[in-house]
Length: 428
Ligand code: DOR
View: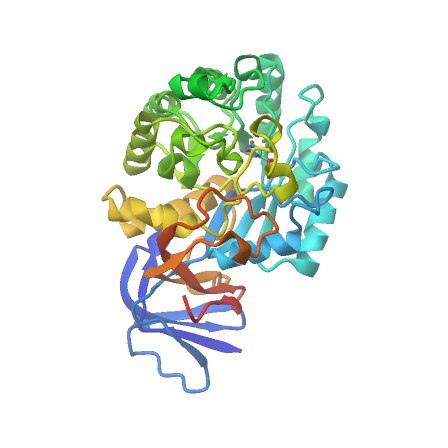
């Protein structure tokens, strides 16, 4: 089977390509890229990508697929359908399932389900500790052999610094990055939103910014001691950014991600007790948003990931204190992130790097490029098309978005996984 994608602006940061090129896929692989009009293959099916951008499929390195155990929130099937709707061809799924992905039989279950049901590639993350309890190390060798690409207790913090040291020593010997959910839970202490004037006014217990940055600094110190690759998840504060910048200036093996809600929203989104804006870490202030945008611009933050955290409506449509934390992010990440290009923080190529080459490099997965011979994981998107975010139209079971009703620009129109069109949106 052959598929020709023609007339688009093709951007492939891994091969330093940006221009009008046609690309042909054969038997699931990228066969050839040539300047526009030069591939003459009449028996190939074709996509006219005029006015669109053609680039490697996006990789979301922070997704909660919820299966096994929480299939009422999301499944491998619905989560990956949401992913391809958003332009992602690979997702990296966190270990906070039930049972926890702390052994190879759970990893196998996720990968078997993915082979059977997934619309895109799925890479599991193994737990750092058994049962996410922060007490006993999981078997990292077994998890790696089973197919895990990183280790994390995301959703839970590792409070015991000695445990984190042992975990990073052990992870290093297996060449696996540790993705850290940085939160001192003694400081966050069951808080519900960012700590400050607004939390006081609303009468909601606050989460101080230092509950994140103290742990960011601790983990940077442990990374320096152990030599383990540390990846900081969902960065939300200016102070964390400054610490990561310091770590990078010292040449430490530290990388970082943020999510679109941390550069598109502030704590003001929770006024009126909007539980759809309740997320952990919480939305912060204008200064933090500015710092995160600057950090994306100067490379301190390597990756945009969604922290896609689907929950049922019943878990969100309750009083603020009782509501689950998290935002369903896969289907809104592209247009929200394109605002960084419109505001001049990133070039379109840099944005694509944060969604493709950078996560691929961090996780050492064979993705994120359009090199001839590589597996054809590709997205074709229109950066300008206007549409309105409507949560009821999400493919995800998680309708929990604070962006419902927002007018945005930019949409994936074709998502291609292993050479097959798995999602097509002709209307935009
Ligand atoms: O808001 C969040 N939800 N933050 C996390 O770290 C975990 C996630 C979840 O699993 O729901």
